[in-house]
Length: 222
Image (tube, rainbow, N blue to C red; front, side, top):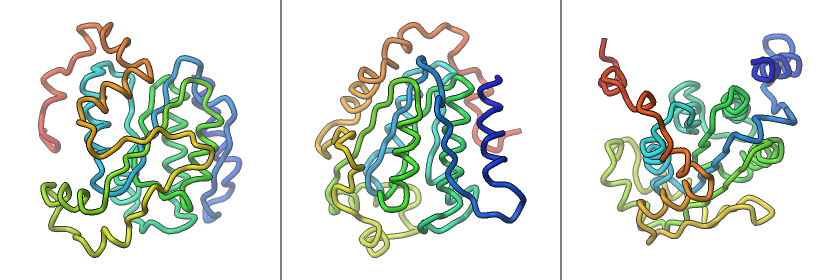
């Protein structure tokens, strides 16, 4: 708990008084040697979010957080994806907070390198445990096909996705494994879980870590 509190304390000290700009805060020693950090990047409709959700479903234990760019940027802040946006530091803070509380973390999103590269590189360098990074390389035409089958297909279309699309927008240093479009999701999930060691911990998940009836209620129920 002392380590988790220090993440917030360091952030508060760096940001200072209300009204100051949000900024990235380096916290060397984020997480521990036992925590796992998984970074999933790629263009819209490349399979990142569904892969993260499936990994957590199979893992079953209550120690795996998902830090989603769409949730924090679009739903929590309702902010455009701009250089130096407030969501960048918020994503960083939530991931570090989870890791420093002993949770494993999947950080997933488009995360274009020119906006998010500095934050992700610092997070990766500061994490004490095993970090696994993946880039979902899906051609533009295939992302359109996949998007058409999604519930939010009517909210935006080909024009917006063309603006967002970046081919092989990799982080520097060759730290990401490339996931090709033709790889089945089951194989992707099994590969990531094996690389990160989550497959072994999933096999050892106690009965009490399985979903309870309240976990299965639709959102907003009650």
